[in-house]
Image (cartoon, rainbow, N blue to C red; front, side):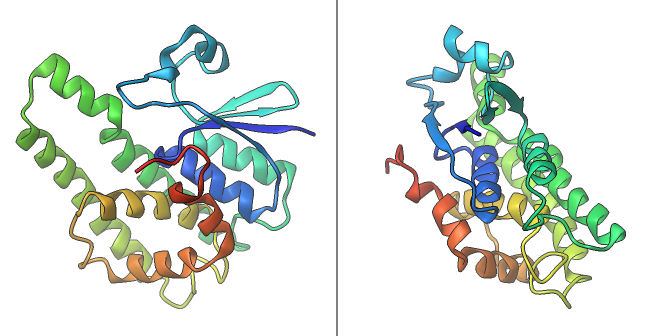
Length: 216
């Protein structure tokens, strides 16, 4: 069994998959795909053979490719169900998946690098306009997540006393917002969850600073 992860240290979708891999204690080969505008390695013909959409991460498992972070995490859960990345109770499982989908589809998808590059190159939006977009969709998303997660305050993590897919998706987005100096003070429950996660070895190993291709 060979796992090979194509990703980049500062890509939050790859960050999610790294957390899942480390939580499950799985060894994997790290393949850096430099997505910075100066490199754009995700658009090379070689990488397009890995993922035709030209996005990261992509997971190779014994020669087969799985793309999209949510699909990769679920794939790992099915292959290696222990330790689980889902709560035990069905409703909590659904809510955990909903938080992950909110992060991936309603927040991150509206604010990733290719969206902002398109805004600038094709629509001529100023940095002020792009920042307004960034602030608006992150604020709406985090307000909704805070309300949802505040209702589960009886658990140490999002919906269980161990990290689940909700926590796996939440931490990289929080990391990005902290780096962007977004005001995170209103989101106390989220902050508490993230602090508990970041105290765990699996999250520390998955952090951008811990990756072999990390640069300031």
